Length: 557
Image 1 (cartoon, rainbow, N blue to C red):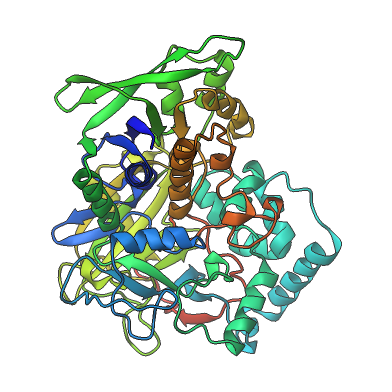
Image 2: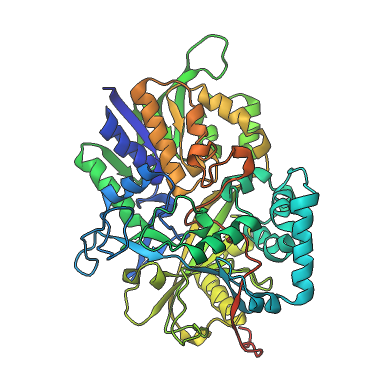
């Protein structure tokens, strides 16, 4: 078996998966360096006064059986009665033990025009009536035109959406929200982002899912392999939030002789040339950084895994890479993220039967607020809420570090969030009992800026033979959690098997093996979890409006 030391930058899903797999498949010792003092990266769980926050919302679901089993090897599934992954049910009771994976029902809706629109779609005359005859006819004609007559060359995300949903549906349910998320017009975002996030999903796919659901019960399993990820009905979720999974993985790494060093900010990646005509050919020899208190540390190894943002990695390379590589790297763009936790007694809106809202998260399409999405943590896991009877919310804002909203003091940010939720009629400010603000930088690697020249970076870093870029930020690729894990697993397998190419790592979530729909990569891609990611569930327009707030709006803050 391969031996040596692997230095892993970042204790998020990709980094910790690499560490676990190195111990399973090789005799290489993993040493994980994490700049923060928390485990899990953007999949961590934030604790506040007995409450827990899931940063971005993480539904654990994958078309990869290997990833599903990996999760369940870390945290066993609950005794869910008739619900099981495939053939077996768990025997663990979340009321008696903490290390339990829950099986949760998925529910997400859109809040638009002060109404809730269900997703997946509900095809009914009532839906068409609420859309309005004119809007429904125009949307239908527009869709038919795109589906049967005109196909645009997909140069941008706007082209991608219009080809699959038509101009009218794109304008109503995709354009404004997506631009709120990314801060730039859809016409300036690469179509590859759509291919990465929503794969083969289209209006036709959404409709066919509804028909199958009506005539074929899906009760029992969570594998749902033939279902688009945006349409899944059930998912796994750790009792104490997604960070619990990665804390458990970190514990495994330590138990098996690995090391994890928190509070180490890597700022120098030393490499040496292997000679020859290849300007990028070489090997990493060590990394350096600062520990808390300013002490400088240095780590040497045989293999190096990087999950740090590509732009930071390129800046830290010593000697510096060629000018072109640095120029492309400096042009990469990231979108940042703020979550405001609100502890409330109740919401102003309820379900039709008077019970609390049952959504995991709600996409806020309203153009008169900055708020992008709202999570109800109670509905992910009741154990995320420290006080029984209270509601624990996560209000999500997408921004840049240079934006005024990012720079707001926490108290002002919390006040803004409270006022916006009151403005759209979802709660009263006076019902808020406590709040907590979390900033997360570089949450979403963007598919604009210099991204169209990313191959320049990839070619150069691939030439550093013992360096493996894995994970979302490590590859500047908007991967889901399971895809990030698979990049790490693939990299470890390459080392174990003496495979020198890195093409198979970059192919994760591109090849049909990893698609949520078994189609060619050019067809399109998608997101499972959870994630945060900010694209609203696709096909949102033939939705059923289920609840409407009063015409009288709350007074502004």
